[in-house]
Length: 260
Image (tube, rainbow, N blue to C red):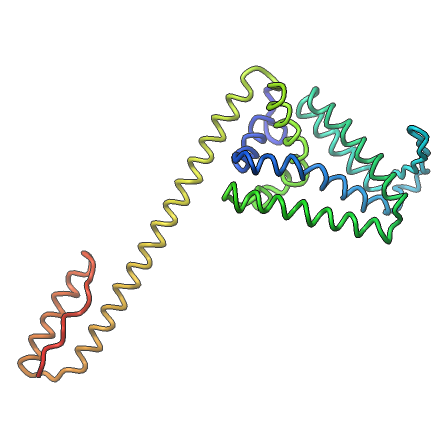
């Protein structure tokens, strides 16, 4: 509470919530966000260790795991640090999940080997990202947040998904009144977005109407050129001029051509 800018949890979570208000879309993100992080760590397991740091041998429950202090480890460390900085309680739980993902992904990658692990990880990435895009396109009907905020899409999404789950399951709040304040900001953001969509649609319709009016004028001009300047032709030109002067009120089709 009281944090500003990048670490303003209330502001950041409200921005995320504005793009994830549909229950089905929320569920799909809860289902797919952490597997995306996990499969990314599987791929990063095969990167070399940073600064030639030694491997760590870890044997939970009798299973030998070769832990490499590489980009995957550094990525998990950055994620965990950010989450704890946002909120100590939920952030600590998220940090534990990051550590679990790093250890378990290292075990899986070591067992599969690179030739198979990258295929499994790529398939998981495609499946999970597709599920999220379906959630936005079909249910949320709003483009995903990654188009507006890459920081949130790739770094904060796992934490926000966890925070949403904690709110739903046990009513957790980082501080009293957090959920109500966030919800008010989410509703205001969605209202503003819908207003912009409505304005854009109306402007597009106005442009179409203007284009239609211009086309009618062009047709009227062509009709005028086809008629000689006899008595009937002069009267027809006068009718067209009246129609052209009335363009601002919506131009109808040119008057029927008089017979000559």
